[in-house]
Every structure is written in C-alpha cells, then in structure tokens.
Length: 157
Image 1 (tube, one colour):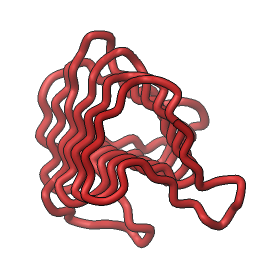
Image 2 (cartoon, helix red, strand yellow):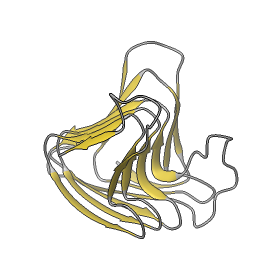
Image 3 (cartoon, one colour):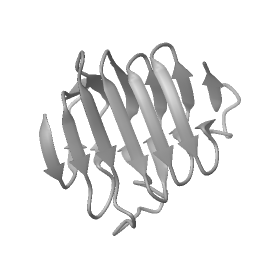
Image 4 (tube, one colour):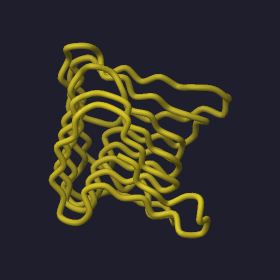
C-alpha cells in the first residue's frame, strides 16, 4: 500500500510462485513500466479485498529490449495471473496496459485499463475466468500474439 513514484521490479531465479499484493497502492513510473517482471517462473498479482490500486507508466520509456519490452504499465516476462476482490486502474500512455510475454490469466478483480496501444495482451494466451474488465485502447482491447504454435495464441473469455 502507499504511493510510489518509481518502479516495482520482480527478478528472481528461484522456481515457484511470486505473489505481489496490491492493497491501495498507487505506483507511477517516471522512466518505464510501473511493474516489471524481469525473471520469475510465475507471478500472481493479488488485488486485496476492498482495495483500489493504480499503475501508471512513463509517457516515454527510457529503454526497451530486443523483444520489445517492457512495453506496458504492468509488464511480465513470466506467466501472469491477476486475481482478488479489489480494483486496479492501469494507465499506459503510449504502450499496452497489461502485458505477459507468456500466458496471462485474469481470475478476478475489477480492472480498468486505459492504453495508448493494446489494452491487455498475453503472448501465449489470454484467459479471463473472473472479474470485470473495462478496457479503452487505441488498438486491440484483448489480444494474444503467439503465431508459431497452433495450440497457443488464443483469447478465452
């Protein structure tokens, strides 16, 4: 909880689940994504019951890697699950709102995304099993981009 002008970075070589609990957190990045998962096996963003949190990225990013990331206010190189009974507002000025370079599951929460590019994007898949979504995006609202494997690259709502 609280206010941060900066960035939260998850970077662990350990196997297992990393849990990031947002409980009234207001994170505004000045040079990049508000939350970046650089290295982890799987990450769960948990929206604490009754809380409202917000993530806002920088208007321009200081650096992006060869794969084009980080390129969202909430960016993950690992499988990402978002759940809980709280609310999350994500604002991305010129990039995507929520991005996973692996799979992305939205299992709960009240998510509001305002993005200058795509709203919510999972590379391998995007699955919505719960929660509510309000997505405003300059391009695609919900998207999956994997095209090298015919069993991946799907959106399931």
